[in-house]
Length: 171
Image 1 (cartoon, rainbow, N blue to C red):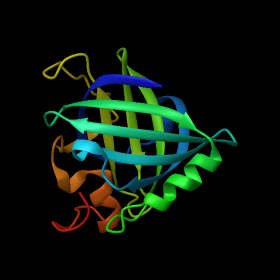
Image 2: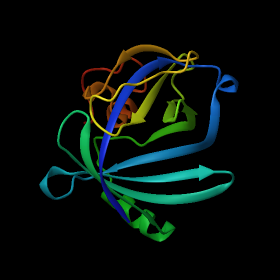
Image 3: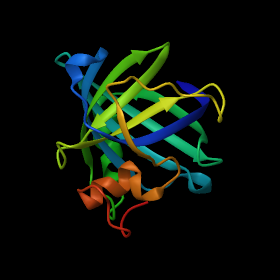
């Protein structure tokens, strides 16, 4: 189990040509939101398929600021995953996404592509401190920063099924 302070910024980007990036990992993720935990923490489970293997992951987040949160995450069994799915939030549909992780100038980027858009994607970067300078690869065209914008949370995107997401839905 890992519990750590996560500092992350998030960007809406034009979908790049992945062949031009230094891709290190790729996975398909099915992410399902659960009823909130103690103190309003956000809880979710993921089924992650990578290189033919399936992992199940439980995550709980407590949000401090738009870029800073405490995240507790650990692997769980298929049985525990199935049991936790009984606690699914009825107002949130699961989200499917394909994630590629790539490096550029010693920065690890995560690019999430969604089935509802071939043109746009969400790019995330974990930082050492909130105002750390970010150097984007030339292949990445940033449309806008969406850090802290609930409309671009995975939960909202799942319900909206589109970019830009509608202002109502799961948060």
